[in-house]
Length: 138
Image 1 (spheres, rainbow, N blue to C red):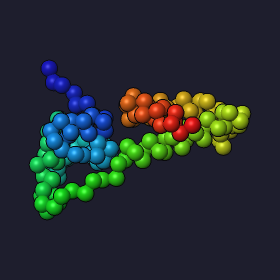
Image 2: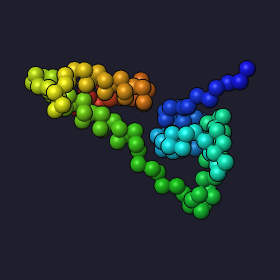
Image 3: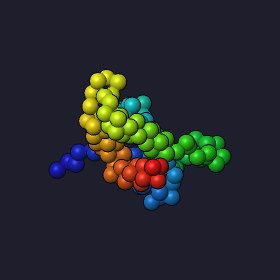
């Protein structure tokens, strides 16, 4: 029986890389392969094992950086958390004031849709972190 390839989440990529002693931006990794259809090389060979690709990135790190230390990438997770907080606070203010969204929609529905999308894209830990930050922000 052939196993179907299942795309990893950015969190899975980041966690696996940490397990093997490699720091990687899971968002950048997933965005890169989403953009090309989860294939690699000039022959556009379909990826069968994303963990093997992460290990290859680790091995090639020195080649790509000319042996220089890699500067940490901007923490995309932090950026996404800040954006999610801003959108959440805005929608919560509209709910509190009884206002519709600029498109005339219900801010409660928009907030629910936003959080479902964030959970699907970033995972439940992201939502937990977002809730914690919102508590501290109040």
